[in-house]
Image (cartoon, rainbow over all chains, first blue to last red; front, side, top):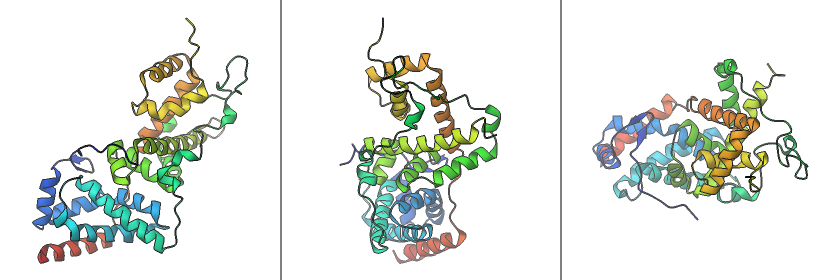
Length: 225
Length: 83
């Protein structure tokens, strides 16, 4: 099952927003190296993250990305623009990575992408809430979050804590939070690239953000200066 | 008037992503905002999450290694030359 698929927005090359797909494809067909280089650079991080859902190591993911580009070039004459170029390339990546993952003996739990809600995962440790039969505030905070210390938020160590927390996420959550919150993709773009429903994309994003927030809160806790 | 359908803190934290994505239904959105207006713990929770998202957005992504880029550009040149 997948979510509704809508017309795709223009390609974003990192922070540049420019040409639409037909111009990009025309430039590629004309042999424009700069266009190819900018695509390869702009999508490298996302391609690697998504590949790592399916293959066991960073090194293999890099090979999958290389193979994806070779396949995409080989098939470019057959690109008809029914999906965005980005979605099209990511679909090639997912197929390539799945095949490679199977060959590497990697068994992806089927539920990881298609049914993430099957295994519950609370955003916050249930121990921080009052019990359901609490006479005054059932399900209310017993140990509420406190205000974040502004001065420590700007420190570079805080960014490192966040980066480490993201690196430690399960691969599917890592891919979704990287595309959404690092790369700034829309939920629709992520759904299209990963063939995810809106609901499942949101579950994965919710869990990823919740885990990273936990790491931030823990790091910034007053007893841990 | 007492809202007997109000949500608890434990329920609110599970709705935060739907809230930020703008996908809460009108009734849930109203309950969410009513709760948030009077609960400092949940307000801090939402702040922490927004801050998490903001800092995540400042991270940089993996750069392509020069070797890998060269390989791809070589492949592109021979592809462009052949077509």
